[in-house]
Length: 181
Length: 333
Image (cartoon, rainbow over all chains, first blue to last red; front, side, top):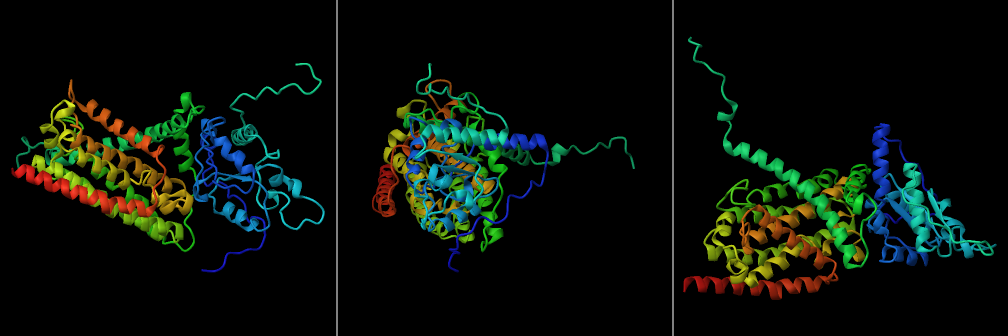
């Protein structure tokens, strides 16, 4: 077996257009996809702890049908890049993305996955500054690390992106400092 | 030629009754298996949620009842990937081989006094013989997918299924000995309505062995080593996407119903109940057993592989053999 390609490169090629293009059918499938986004069991750093917390009793991502963390990329729909993408890890991230069957979505969870976060400074040599340099990202969830609620909100944003509709009520934000409630 | 008394041949006269019965029965069973898998996946996720003190699927439809329908449609709409280096024909044959024999296994199950598809003298044998196809499909899936995880998962599946089939057969045989029949309908009819008249009262050890082996045969936790996520990615179905994976899932849930139906017919009095015997008693017992299986899955951690094989070869097999011998001696006396 040939040694795996270890060069750091972005994903090649895109998603092919659907063979059958019937708008109502597409809408139905998009709705079903939005309601059953199975994430991949795949954590890179501390943001993965928040990703685990979101599956537990207090936040419970299973309410929205997304608790089926599939260990195999072939069976998952959503890649949650939870943490710093080190240059060592970059070929594996690209490979995992390429192994996922279409339609596939990527969520960049946390500042490291968005832009490199605290590890992004002049002269750094270890990390990829933002996973969107490697794979196309659908939803960015900022935070260091983001709260589990933020991850849920990212899921809702992805559902909105898929179906064009927000399904769950938006949270009421607490008043800002110095602002009257 | 006199054509006055000539009538068109009645198609239903020339068609054997058995064929009609089989076609109607298989259609009904296909609908039953499909509907049941959808419901059971939902129930499983709900049970998992309740055991972990969370609501489980909740927002997709009222109480989340549309969750598995969304999942099924999504799986149908997924791209099908045939990995490079795999044997394409065997790769896609495997899920079909895993799924089709399940229908045959449903045929001899006595749902009720008159609700059955086929009444056969060797009904138990028919089910056990076709249950062997399951391990063939796992083996094919692991071999054809050209993936080390798949291959190790398949090797584990073969070692586990072949090993656990023996005590399972011996436990079933003890019941067949005591009734002198392999006809599920006859075995059910010889049991009474009340729990102490069921075979589980006379053969408690056989029931225990059967249930443990059934868990292992259907690859359910705590014996789900062929698909152990922590070490094998997803085991034999690592490389299957979309409905290939869906068919394995469907076959797993259908197999669960088969082993629970067999346990009900052999040990729990089948459709006999304290009042108004009928298919509802059968279904009640089957779903009770299924809930116990789910409860065990979310309660116990996965066993290690040596523990799994030791349990089989050092405990279940000798116990089942002794149980069979004791039954034979007791019958002879």
